[in-house]
Image (tube, rainbow, N blue to C red; front, side):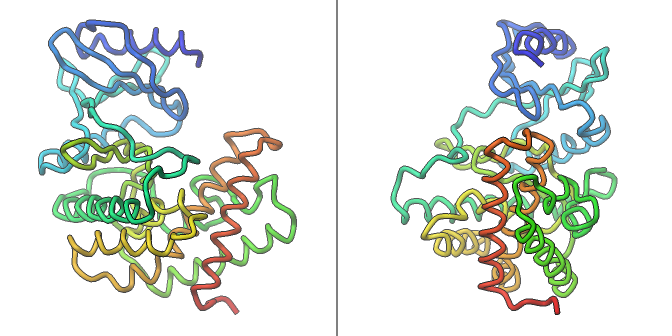
Length: 324
């Protein structure tokens, strides 16, 4: 979808929320097209044109019901803005779904591929707060009734089954045959590891990258719940760390994240021990995610594949193999 087409559709969608005071500003045109919008009644929001075919309308509504409840508990996330008729989503004539949430005036704590500008100590202090933010999310969610919220799964089958949610990562086109075999071995071991520790399944964010964690004078905020679903709490923590998998002080950053998490929810020894597993699981998911989103010869294919291979190596160095 071209930027011009996206802006036209955003203007069309926005009418059910009210009169725009200015042209929507396109800020992201990747998975979803996201716009900064201002309405004549003073409402300042982020309008999303959801990627066609990725989430059903009922699933998007479930996401927004969840975040609406979280915001009602003062959790730092956007507030869904309902249409003038009280709906959470609006379907355009071509079937694309639109939604609007409140604008968070804050900046991401980092960007993919960008080096943290502060010291290692400052980075760890920040991720102590990130760990608290994740724990607060999990704690608040556990207090809600999410039974009727229909969202995708991020369980063992969705991550490691024959058809993973984000793609068959071991078939990444940049992999050599020996590398593919290594990922398959790690896949088998990870499945058995999950079965052995049997972590509970909860509603999680599932995409806690640093671009989705904002910071302002009020603290940290979590945005973009588009991939939220039912999975392991540890997967949220592993996802938070995946963009830093190559850092020489990754262990210290991981410890800081866990300590922040435990400062809210108490000691989590099993979760801390399984962190290399969950970080590896995210690296595998991303290795599959890129397959359908980039040409076979795109450098990103190899970037994600190499990161998955490094995470596999780290996992086997820190975890006793379960597969025979």
